[in-house]
Length: 396
Image 1 (cartoon, helix red, strand yellow):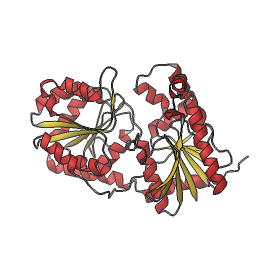
Image 2 (cartoon, rainbow, N blue to C red):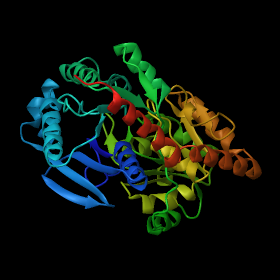
Image 3 (cartoon, rainbow, N blue to C red):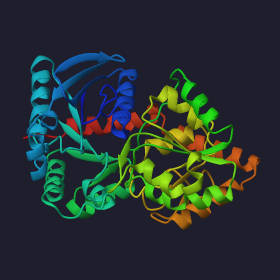
Image 4 (cartoon, rainbow, N blue to C red):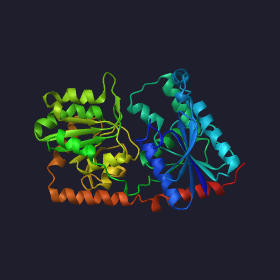
């Protein structure tokens, strides 16, 4: 079947190639291709272009986010309306030339607002705006209310909604009454070429010390403030430990995220090592050599960062109540701490640092085994079954 995957992020886009949605969509498209289907990606972009990437046809669609009018539409919380219209206009153009069997929309950006009504459509919960806004402490501005309303409206436009996390699915059902089918994210055991140049730089900068790793977006949502508020105590407890941060610095309210961490590290600030956004080939060696991976998110949705780390048999420290417990069994294949609690995070890291190497290896194996349950031939077949069901539904 021919499946159009509509997304606000993709690995071809410089602005968001490393985002969770971008990598989920890419892995799903590759998996569909390997199973004999024809995925077509339609992505919000700053230009109009059709290209082939990894054997997948990608349609870049210019949207309002990249225009001078963005600021005014954004303030009103209605910038998603013209963006959805533009993305769906592109789908109609594809459909006129080659029949599209089914559309998969991301809920981010309310891409299904102007869904093509004569093509079966599903939406994937890549997140949930209400929970995101709460985690970002966004308040109740016009922008917040507008985006939350449009997001819920878009979910009502599709034939079925699915997502990888019970927590997010239950929140959506509670607020909207829409049932959400659980389909976890596919994860192929990556074989991309490794480039250890950045890892070797970090090894030199850390002077060969062990390091803990955070990677992803550095900001309030992902718990950077929580790390900062306990890092001085951690460095004092472990004189030969460094902390490596990799990813886009989204900032906090009054400063950059990495500036906050370094300031809180005090006299130990030189043991905070930062690298920006990296492609997977450069990121994976850094994950592979980390002592622990620390991901204290305030909110998450079956995070790729956790899955990737577990695939490398790393012990991950995540937060309770934020979907990490759907991947991590506390004390078995990783550890969980309390959200927004520097004391809890410190205590869990301290306990994890004391785990004997033999038990660490055993926990790492169990972490890896959990990621094998996300093999594309298991997960994507569930997705194809959902597509088939909505295609078989009588349409008005």
